[in-house]
Length: 334
Image (cartoon, one colour):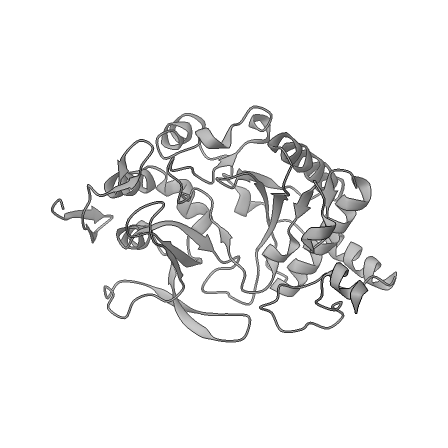
């Protein structure tokens, strides 16, 4: 193994052990290449992740190797490392890493963390959820062109409500739309808004979009995964690197790029040059927070019409107004 490298990261020393270890097989990029990538995109990265708790996805042997999710930071950490207490759906607490600055990110990269799953709130204000995250998840048989179409229709629908979404690739087959929110709502309200949006999209575009939680009911449609907004839920972060051999990046893009973008080509080898040339497509997003009220009005309308809450993931306690947690095909047999 190569000797460790110590970096001065804005006045904080961060040691990178085994810097020449290959993390991404397709082009042979190393752990140090991953560090250099995050240094290259530090500005836009911290503009969206900065100050938020992070769930680490660790691959000490690189993409394709043994992996695990790590919410708790190790017991032995530098004295400058900032953590915050986060909770699971059942109330279990742990000390999670905070994206306080680039040194914190690179410290985690040295542990083999390729990318980060990010909480939708800031560590110093956990009671306020300030992002709505719309996950357009392709069911089997759905093409990326269909996901593109769903993204455009989602943007158009939000536009009728005066809500401005921003777009990123997932680093895989889907797309994420983010909405920066005014600091007025908690995670239960944000999820309710996401459910209402998913249902309205399905009503208007039933052949393309589905809000059905049970896979057997989705068909070959784009699923709007509203439960990505459930309390304590994390989403893979913008500018973060997926554990794939090609080192694909979950990349913010402009709406004008959507028609021609190929997510597979957005990698640690190409994204820094895009940032240098185009800047940050999400620049200023947090300075234009949006109101969730139009979507919450739809939510109240749906509940008043007799609709129950949408199903929650099985790890969550049973919620008021939630339908039975049983697949429709099983319910018919009982």
